[in-house]
Length: 507
Image 1: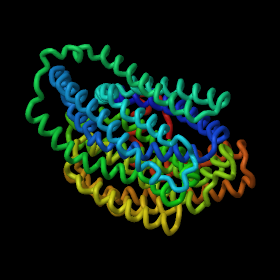
Image 2: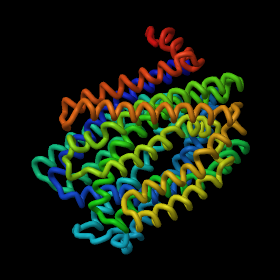
Image 3: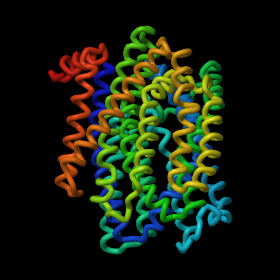
């Protein structure tokens, strides 16, 4: 049942993701052709700034979602209803808090922007603020669908909303290029999409409407939630410092134009990370179900397979980025939007380190181990901010990337697997890093060989050459992976699943 639900979630999520991503690239292309690059910088700046305000969520969502796994598996509707009532109250308060605090930050808005030449930035900021704050008023019901292994339903609503938004934004940018209309459409779509998804959850879980005699949460569940929220505060701070400050630092010390250039690369790289995020959001509920019901050996075996898949994906994507990221930017937007090869190389190294954390974090979160590494994100945040600010002041854009690499290697790289294997999954840490080293070395060698072959075959950047490059990188990376790891137990497991569940016979 878990494999069936995970497969369904992955299928719908992947289709929705590819469609949304394609439209995002088209929207970005029309955007940079219709409006000055400083508006792109404003877009990235406000997205990061409001992600900082979302720190007010304090980990309520992950903490309550984790507590939903067991009652959903046991069909305990009373506990589910009680948890969702707490969820509703918490998210309404959070949404209002974000809007109020965000308005109070208005007088200091220009401090984040070096050489601001854009008018009406305060009003643009308010629209972004309403978009962020209002999303909490209905979105909590999405988490119930996701926790119940029904991520595909959430994906359908997300995709529908984003498709409509993209079509409207492209149309208005071509006919009447106005940043005002661009972000107002974003706000209207967010509200409508969350409302429709919430109504779907109401229909799927009709017992949620019977709130007259809702029981109080049992003490053990309440204590677990409170404990996890306390731990998640640190995780939220760390996540904010890592993922929501790069554009702020660049805007403050380099300028909005640099934010615009950086955000184009970040859009592509985050698209790959988001793909993994979509993949794991599709199977996290199944992992939670696995952890709640299965033996330690079963958990360890499934983790190894999951880590194997993540490393395989990281090889294919990393190889493609190393060879084709700059050609993609040049074809998509033009040479004037390119970074130096050295900066791009560091971006890819940072991407690989982040991507390889996916399996560990999925199992760690599904195991509810938020408390066990509560100090890690604080250390990560301090190191990242200090290194990024210092290095950006002295070395420019590349400093932000170096800051991320340094903080990851000194904290997440070893702390997260240590916590998981000590408290959740019975695996030797030495064996994990031995596999990690093998995966990383193969990725490095494959990327270098792929780029050498590509540059030897193709002298100019064109759409045809790019497509051939994609085929080349995909073929080389997969052949290398299968050739090296064809006899591993994880590969045998994947062969069996492909044959038994999907009727596929390969490698």
